[in-house]
Length: 141
Image (cartoon, rainbow, N blue to C red; front, side):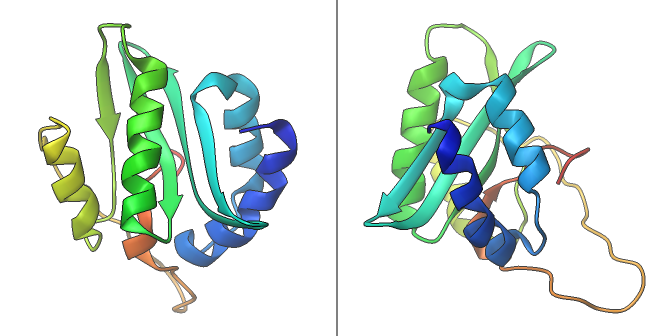
């Protein structure tokens, strides 16, 4: 991913995540560019993945994609960028995305717990959770 790519993520991210996170995405890219990757088809962004260092691990996410095969390639690329650091990798994802659960298990990830996404107030657009393969973190969404 290059700096100018980050602005191109907002349409796909807003559509699938359900809210604009452009400020968060820009900050994550600014802090961790070697672990940020984008997939496009022509001029259209079809997926992206970011990872960041946290305490004693790397957190993979946000990871948003419209295609399960592309999501797999993004994960493999991201994991290679971290490879050799002998450190734990973590992913949090919405339970409606069953594809990521299977994919992560194939890559050797182990399930450790659940969290809930809650809403207060009028029901608004909540995105398409099947396209969210990894959240930016429990504190970021």
